Length: 385
Ligand SMILES: *Cc1c(COP(=O)(O)O)cnc(C)c1O
Image 1: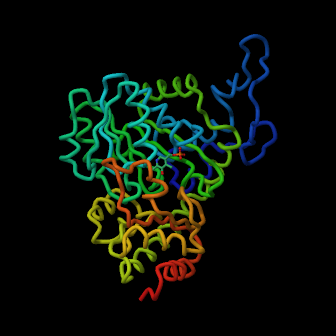
Image 2 (image 1 turned 45 degrees about the vertical axis):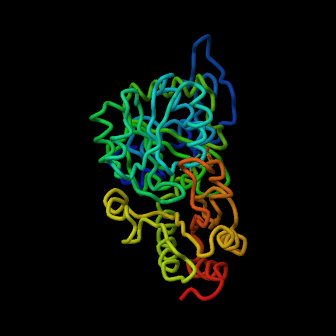
Image 3 (image 1 turned 135 degrees about the vertical axis):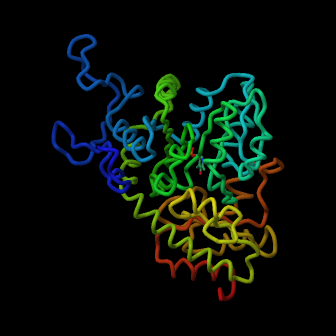
């Protein structure tokens, strides 16, 4: 598939060549561990064992590389498996990493509770402030890790500006692109070295699979990561790879609707008397609005807001929602609501990444917008005028 094609076309066609044996237009689920060899070392399609490579996973990996404009995509069993592989490829004991002050809770836990035991140190910085990122660098820093929009506070980091800092310091820039998806944001083109995804979210898009991905441009780093992917073994299984590949075909149309619905939800919330603050990069008053408008095609489907009355009031809103399903995760076609302080971000309690207790996070789905607004209005109690 030519790189000349536009995103929507690549999403459907990249990696999705018709099955050579049958002509099936969708890559089959090659649910297989090993491959018959025509004589010792005589591999038919280059496949020998499915941890090393599997045709369904290859289809997804080629698709991921095309969508992010990278040279190589690698698919993992989960977003955190991808992150773990990346950490252990880029870092050795004594190295230091700068991570964002509102990183995904599991990413923070991976650094704070796992990588730290292997002698990898980290500092927490407000990555939306480029000077703060520069100030957090030490002579041992090897990686700057950025998440934009961030989770759950929807902070925006200027990827191109931080890429400049990283280049100057000779360190690598990793961008977790889970919230935006490659349809809305292309970190490699903005100067990042590695893109991380939880494909569980918008890429899969249907809340039916857990998966992760890495995409890189540098061929040497691609080889090192592929070596570690096989050596560590947390690969995406064939069926999971197939589900993500299937989900990606509708990514562009889903993201357009997520964005449209989230814009309406954010607008309604800003006018609601019980809402004290709405965090959505599409709002002109959002501190990262201009940078988001510059580096994103649209603002995405995640909206967080703070509720008058503190933690109990926020929990009540979550409990009263009906169409918005109370649950963790995000990025599926169905709308979800959650209380980060007690749910997704409970592990950050007492740390620098602790989230406000009165915060509610929405993953706005692709249902009818009026139905979503009505549900939020009843959950907040009273009229949404
Ligand atoms: C969910 C998520 C992850 C972790 O991915 P899993 O697939 O759950 O392992 C990483 N980063 C972000 C931003 C996420 O939302």
